[in-house]
Image 1 (tube, rainbow, N blue to C red):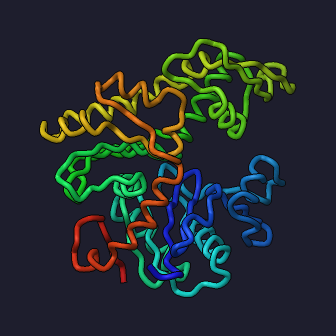
Image 2 (image 1 turned 180 degrees about the vertical axis):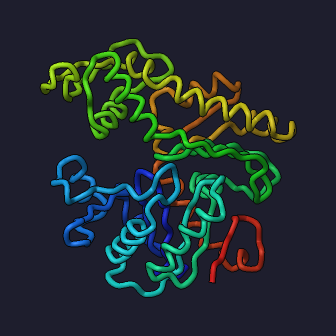
Length: 338
């Protein structure tokens, strides 16, 4: 692996970047602050995230990725360039491996690759999220032994069964962390008539969410605007409220896990019963999610070590395979645009 090799987990919520053998060097929100008057990027990542909901109308804090894919090419390119400058000082034509959801289309793939090429990449590779997640979790996917991964990020949930260097069955749905936050905002709005912001919803989710066996003991105070009075107000919500707000969204993912298992060859289902299901991504940390899946499908389910960084670590490991990949080695799906 060259010192300038860059791995990018281009997530809807966060961008995680690895550099050479240094490991993870950037883990910041996927946000760009843009000045519409001066037509220039003011900040990216954490600095831009701080500006969400706090800027004059001519400064916009944009999230250029939606549901796991690029929704704003120009802003994504600007964000990638800034992050690469941040880690390298100057752009030195690096090799870049980018991570995408398993159901991404050719058009969406091309948008990601072109953004990386415009940012100064010498060569660009694409790796699918489930494969990167398994590599990052330390699973040896080269054996003919079935392993199931449920990778829940900010924009998409990727569910896949991998065996013998490839994905046997997979499914990607646009139901993940951002939709969970939206469900909490909607739930508080309907139950307590208070409108809260994205950051507040996300913080409450991290602190008290339990979707398996809440008992009402965990509580958090959220602040927002009362919809009828139009004035600032706060309310205390509990973990039982959280389950009520989130259960429909969560069950969508559980149902997809069942669907993938139903379409998986029985020999591999037997392996999954022995090996268990691995959960990665920020959504895996939602309280009780692993136990809910385990109960629903009857197979053990565990959360990978440091699930948020699993995909990024897998992307970094993928550089060990690039020479074989160029010869058509099928360990990782690869696309090259010249």
